[in-house]
Length: 184
Image (cartoon, rainbow, N blue to C red; front, side, top):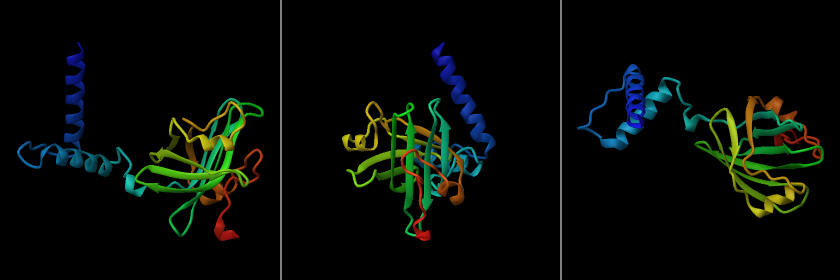
């Protein structure tokens, strides 16, 4: 039964890729090249986002049931991003901070802080629609959070990719999560 499902899935993938005009030739290029060709065909067909063309800028928001989780990013001329995050877990339970981030092919590296407290270094992934913070974060990230809260595993969807929307992101204790350094 399981083999039949795998065979059916394989056939489906081959048919989809064939429809994209990709030819498989086992005599040339090997598995690495065919994987690369498959990715290129999927990007060209708009099935997946080109990781090199991603832009983190914008406002991310989701209703957690306790309030709105928010993330914002403003692209600077240097290529880095000014970012802010608010993750809500209850009426007075949250994580909140601001800092900087870099984006490299869907991999996000952030350095956040709250006031002048210890910095929090964390990683996340971004696929063009969803920011996903890693499931494990450094102990220093606890400085951004109230007791019983953590940024680990937080996922927030992009709702508006404009700079204007990002600058309007409000926190709970931090008035504006993202401030554009070019306005200062």
